[in-house]
Image (cartoon, rainbow, N blue to C red):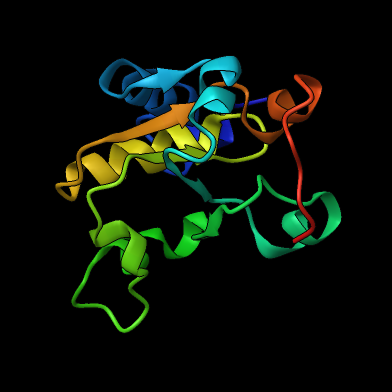
Length: 134
């Protein structure tokens, strides 16, 4: 079997993109993230059905990965005000991949004080972090 991604012209796979992102961003352990609850804004980049099925970190804002750039940009009609604040932003997804890429994107767009939650929501719940309904 041939590697379809290279047949389609892909020159960099998701694993390489993730490796690069992780090298450029700050990542907190889930324990460090739990300690930041109440002091930082948590940004859930999962898709809406994931939130509905599994809940979210209490107080987290929802900014799906697919709309992230529009939510961050203050010129966008989809802008979310928390991205314009000076508060620390902790991004998470299901297991940490999408949120790592999201943090990298936020940094590229000029945000500082952004970090990824290692292991995402799965690690959060395994560590008995609090969960709220979507």
